[in-house]
Image (cartoon, rainbow, N blue to C red; front, side, top):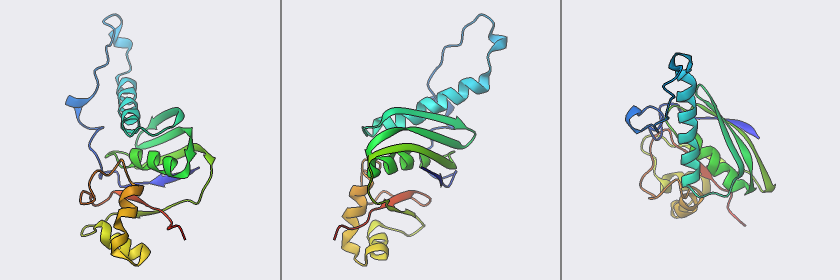
Length: 167
């Protein structure tokens, strides 16, 4: 468990696009009593759940809560890698500054390192920095699938998993 910080302005622009927000039917009766900020918060939480669900990660009892720019995520996964991918998927959404990780891991393993992509970075440059070998970039690419779909499509501010190399 832990609190992860992200660049709030970097990432997929899901939470600020009003035209793409899911439509929530608000009853026509007593609409003066509807808390529109709470409806918007629930819409954003649905979008965040959709981000994680689209990755097809096996997370049981999955729940998210949103308080401003902080997401708290609950659930259980089998591996540390799955846990880290869920945290990164949520944190790499524009508008999210922190992810409070409350996910339990059934089979604990060593925690990966994390790297914030800077302007001019490439996976091979990052691999050289962490592993001493730029040709090990596929290790980083594979560790960040399915969030990454192309090794050439990373952006400044994105947080990436840098797994430990197996001996």
